[in-house]
Length: 467
Image (cartoon, rainbow, N blue to C red; front, side):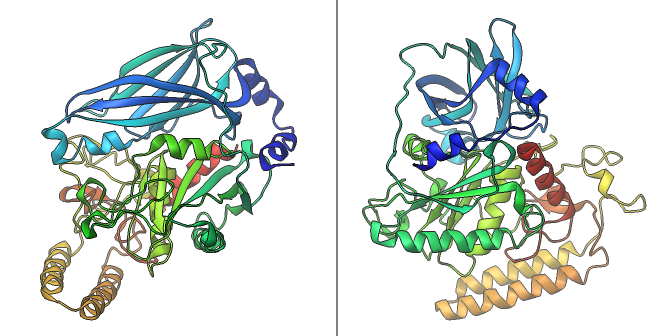
């Protein structure tokens, strides 16, 4: 019995009322719509590529409508006969990130993207919305889909590939299902991949709140070999025949790892049930990436792999924003000035009396919350200048280690340490954006935990998937 058949047979009964609502509109399969997303920094267009019916639907049968208001995009599924909204999800995309780069101001590009949802029984209308300059969702595209049409593909891809269970807690419909895909691992290196995947999962479940919620997760690892080890590193003119076409230097950021090959990723992943995709990279070079409800990437053989694995999953799973602002990034004006970000852990402080995480703050906490930002920023600038002048790798590593320790001690010595507040400096911006805590897994390259606001956001997402 293969894994797909075993999972389908192994489905168990759950909340009858929720199941009844699900069964009114959907089958236990998955529909995937591939489309082309094109445009410039200020324009966008959509066109259908292909539509697939895949294997078992792994998502919740209860929480069909997205209530979290996260992501730059939102797709909605309407039953044509009743005009009832029957499914929706927020998400982000590579195109959406590309729009914030300098390149998008000067040229047009197109990217392959996909949306997935439970397979509808009857005709539906799909709408896709994106946020405008005020972060309000505006409908950009709508298409009808009839699941009975012959041109909807029902091909099963990668049927004979090995899929290992790293963590099995039961029914996919009531769990967060993570599928880990390898890139840059050859057939001979599959044992290394499985070892690396287990080690990264151990790190994830040693971190709160995943540690306390481990029983709400299933994790599978797919043994998908590449023809050569490693992935592309364009700055070193290294190009590799890797299975998923992942590459460093995405959007000209050396450490940012993405793949443009959406269709290959989706076809491989269709062989297993999943809510979240994680691509584990066979490399020692520092790097990774995470895009909300798309996928995460992380290198497997670096001293910081554990930190990256958890940090990037925070982006892709819970929609968390980066809280740091002193590192170089690929984006130009990632957040619109004077507009409240949608990310749950970043605020533009548009209303001092109604901070988005006010429920976690003490009434006497000052807004904004004072901290020694001038000292922090000047010391960071001095460190970067010194490090850039060093030639030897050992000297650079030593300087970075010393500075990391200084940051750790400095933040914990602040009077406001341990306080949920509104601290200036977040979302790649030194001024005008604020974070909820002095330090967090989304702020520092360290093994510090998630701050209380991030913890809450992750818990809410686990609940959303596992109910």
